[in-house]
Image (cartoon, rainbow, N blue to C red; front, top):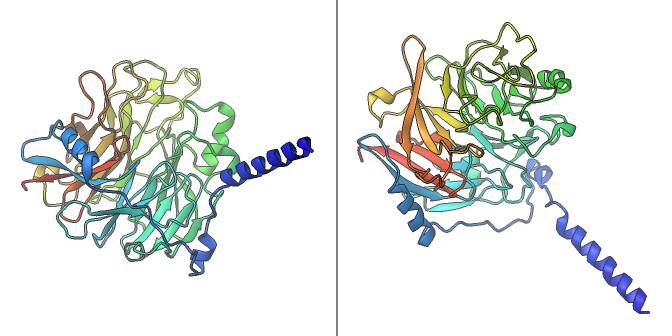
Length: 416
């Protein structure tokens, strides 16, 4: 009898554990049919208190060019890439976990007063990359899926929102190529109206047997497709892990950051900001580990003749991530059409670098130079007070900076 009792208890425990580990239901089918899901609650993030005080104390250490200032905009857990709504109502913030956050400044005092989870009935998987189309369609690029949310700026007030597949689960990359590494996607709508998505490859340097598959499906590159999910093409190859891109509003050409090979030393290879001028250009990885530095794994291989070298080489291992072209009128004229980008900071350099906002200015002849713009999140003793991830522009011309270490979004303004 005792044995049966123990067996029954063990069986119940295993069943309970299985239920606890079961993934949350994904209500996409119901939302796509405009049906309710029964979800009523949001996760609301407190915006005041000691957390806000500590973040503001950190911001006192940040240095900026004269006339600029930085303030706390919102407390946003795990804040990664951002998409500001075309109407200026709400900013959506992705994460590398399971949440997308909606951030609202209702009274327009340039400080958010509400942060809550977006579409809480959906089971997101690494929803790092939100982006908007000019007509208000929100796209979210996940690890292996892309969703569209029409009129998200208005529907976000409800837990149930209109949501549809652009690329169904398991169709963005082959399921067998899913990885925990380099799976933070970003997206942009190009001047051609197509949806562009970065697809980082999962290795430090991929083995040769993977190259043909990756070239064919766009892993280690950037793909583009129609906004309804059709017409997929590989737009860019030779990319290790891009987690930031934008189109130059003056030329319509694509620029993107790229994170380069680890384990080659503190000072090589350099990070990259790249400039694409033609369809299907090749940016050199894995033959080059960054800049003109050859990888050990491919040093004896012949480099393709069509490789395009980076427009800008950045400090090694600083982890250049999100970027945006500045098109506002708040900042001085010298910053118009400059690229603002985030350096997340090194993870394995013996002397840490990065954790700052950079500005890259493009001359009339197309040459580009980059320099620090906002820094101080990395202390002289090598401690990270924050790790910037992405840059986005508000309607008033100020800039938002996300920070996934501190769990915050900051606002940089000029002349206020």
